[in-house]
Every structure is written in structure tokens, then in C-alpha cells.
Amino acid sequence: MPAMSVTDVTSTVTELTLEQARKLFDDRCREELGISAAEFLAAAQSGKIPSHWSAEAVSRLEILLPFAR
Figure 1 (cartoon, rainbow, N blue to C red):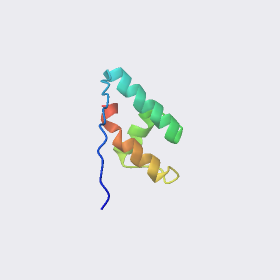
Figure 2 (figure 1 turned 90 degrees about the vertical axis):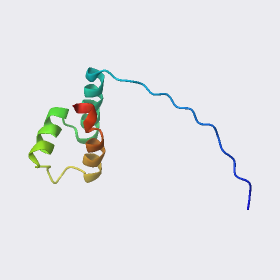
Figure 3 (figure 1 turned 180 degrees about the vertical axis):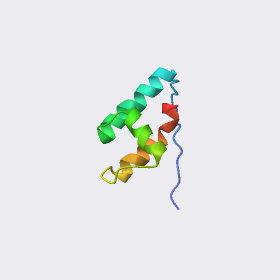
Figure 4 (figure 1 turned 120 degrees about the vertical axis):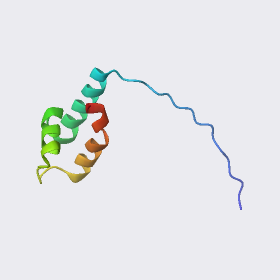
């Protein structure tokens, strides 16, 4: 069995203000679906996600929901 190596990985964490986090979420909604964060949140909260929205895009945005709140 070949020897395995471990690479040191360092990462940087950037804390966002609430305003920055909400802008990030709004920007992603616009990039993914061409709609505002408010439009996405209204649809998600009502449980009425349009069928023409990409399921993958909706999933990616749902992961980011903590940035919207």
C-alpha cells in the first residue's frame, strides 16, 4: 500500500453582518432563479414552489436560508 500524506489545510472564516448575510442570500436568489430573496422566501414559506424552478437551485438556496434570517 502506498504511503499516504496529509496536507495541512488552513481556512479563513469571515463573519458577516446581518445586512451582508441578507445581501448574499438575495444575490444568490437572483443568480439561481432570477428573483429576489423576498420572492423566494414567500414561495418557500407558503409551500408553493413553482414547478419551473430548478430543484437543484431551490436546494442550494434552502441551504442558505440561515443567511436570510
